[in-house]
Image (cartoon, rainbow, N blue to C red; front, side, top):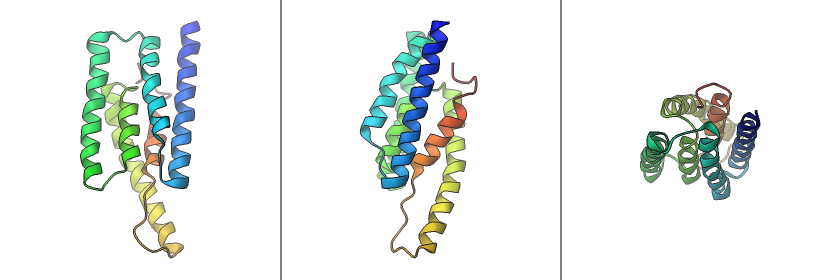
Length: 154
């Protein structure tokens, strides 16, 4: 029973960090490294709480995190994604099984399209100059929050 409360506390902590990431990205177009580090640092506690074995469980989590980071770092290098967004996705990949990471990426892309549309419309309605900066951390955070209650998380 105590283990269930600990897992619930970790999910609540992750939820709070995701909400903070979305708000800061919306306000300042920045996702703090501290938030990303906190999310990544809590993941091993999640693994312990879920009874994840070192092999292959933790190894797979680290591999998925590395693949997600490399994939989105390539998008960052092409100017298609912010650095905080890349780090947030990599940190979240430590929390979810690889199947849920795929769901996270698909949902993030759909929500990202909606966030982009709203941002562009707002940018044009307020007659701002230059290219709009898309707060993609909002889409990432919403996608992760959507997936949290489902049983795909160990």
